[in-house]
Image 1 (cartoon, one colour):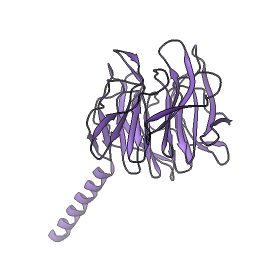
Image 2 (image 1 turned 120 degrees about the vertical axis):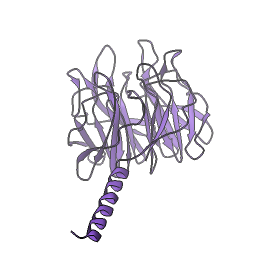
Image 3 (image 1 turned 135 degrees about the horizontal axis):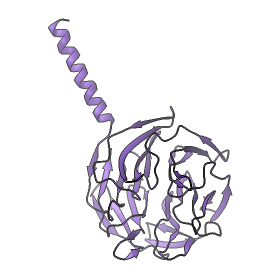
Image 4 (image 1 turned 180 degrees about the vertical axis):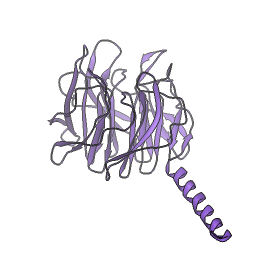
Length: 310
């Protein structure tokens, strides 16, 4: 090989290495969450703002404070407290220009069914229809288009469920859909890619799970996909950008910090850059059109840091 060819080969190799490193993604620490250190909070995005609320901290127990994050300014602003009772392990999602929080536990033996809508334009909470008749905690939920979907979780005394529901904000109505086909579980994670929803991992009565399922609202059917390629876990966080979904952190005998990407077109999992902060579980995650955000949760105690993945 000539000297010139060697130089070209080395330049190409260096370029491919750079591309590969860049493709793995980059974690950047942002300003810490301005509320108390907490776990089992909820988060969603509306437009170009992020919202975080409820959860539990060691000092005060279940909480109801609610915050808005501006990614451009990297600043937190406290908004009107969540109007329901303090809680943790709730569900949160957004539909259009409104946000929703509901279910969870208030820190006693009572599990909750109530749901509330937040309007960022007026900074006002409005109560909406309850989710079913049984209170639940540690469920999972996501939105697709102008509807939202929620299910699984615990309904009390260790009773795990697999029912699944659709919320129509126009009719203010929850409609039961076909059950989640995996084992009954709690602390699963879910996200949306296009017009499909995805649910996987979680804790069942047989232990930590790694199965992964796709839900089609158009046909009200579930399809089993490639198992999550990381360690089976519960309390993981997830988000999506474009045709890819991501699962990060969680618990399996210890807190985790690995990040995995799901390619929904190829039905393939690929490990990406490990989360750069402390391993944790029961965190929050939010995605916008081009970036993902992750933080809070628990290691040996609650955490309030906040990160961007790009």
